[in-house]
Image (spheres, rainbow, N blue to C red):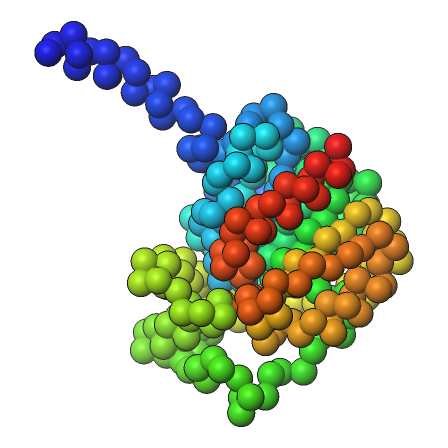
Length: 296
């Protein structure tokens, strides 16, 4: 029995270092702001940098821990003000494009990522373009925009509440008021997907949303989300992945954005909402893998 216990204890470190088990890094971003970054997968594989959306965090990509990890190195930061990363208490820590670009550049440098494939979900698409605006299209192998047009075309008008199947907005996540904040977190955790999330997924979303302060949300409201000038300059392979049931990014908006880019194509997921990587993870992972392989 003692020998068996010793064998298990000695084996534990090896088990803990499975390529599918994330490990954490802390990287100093713009202004020395600490950013918590998760890494998993094949440390020698081509890097994929996964950038989450507004109010969320790296945990959004939990369904990308799978076959992708066998061949690729996966990196997912919590953006400043989000998740486990630091939350500076001044508006000027959030309201310029170069801040977000320098955060990504710091992660790329600290983790020695050689021209990563960028994957931007929703607001994460804007962050990816902030980085490419400063660094240039040659700094990435390619770009995947999931549920995002990243400001490449004018935003679509808000969906008609009378035609929406989603619950109407409630609460106010920018208010320093717990009741309004929790109402907003409950609503936001529901509308990210076409179908209601499982109780566990909804709880995880609510927890992540609550890790972002109302002050940060108010500061980010001042960001100018217009990248229309970048379209002709984005001379790299771009893949749009979007859900046909995503009320915030209609299919015609995606088509218009793809048409503005030299090397872009779009893939639509029928009946899927704003989070294709979570709602249809097997298909998303297969499409991402095929796109990544095409860049090698």
